Image (cartoon, rainbow, N blue to C red; front, side, top):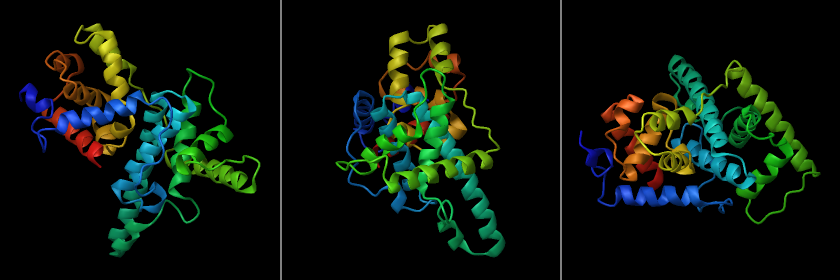
Length: 274
């Protein structure tokens, strides 16, 4: 597979890689959260709709950016979120198959929890798991989330609405932890940078920049196949391709499969177009 294919030139449209790279660059360059885009909110869509999960991950990225937390926390939160969603859909699918009732696939996360409760619970778990900075209190997380969900509205942490929201997220956190058997560990993405810099496959600053893009909103929203099956090294490699970085040294440094890199690039491209 030649480097042009890896760079995404085989994707639909000659402007595919350039458009995707531009979108990703805008994600990484943002220092404050952007107003919610004129698309359906995650909560208005069904759990089984990939758009709902993608929008939720974009919102997670915006909340993290607005609160000043690391993009690594956003990645960890999305991975927890994807794992829970996959588990929920798998269980729902099993019940649908046993009852021959496909309408079960249109269920929400729970009769008592909204998708956003699970979304914020995943973010809060990731926030508490990181050791770099002192983790944010739930009240602060909800304040930043409110700004993303309801641009221009004022958040009153003392209101009964805010208190109820806080209680729901705490309950959702327990639900997610229990469903995942409290296994929310993620090895992170620093090892990818260490591998490519240590083998001189890529210069340190360039690797850091590529990883920042790989952990930006549209890449995180590219779906569970990219993040649960392929992992951060393929997101990183696909971004390197979009940036026209020499790919050849990356393959031995990260033990990459060319076709998987190509598929990862397609997933990211379609996420940016979504």
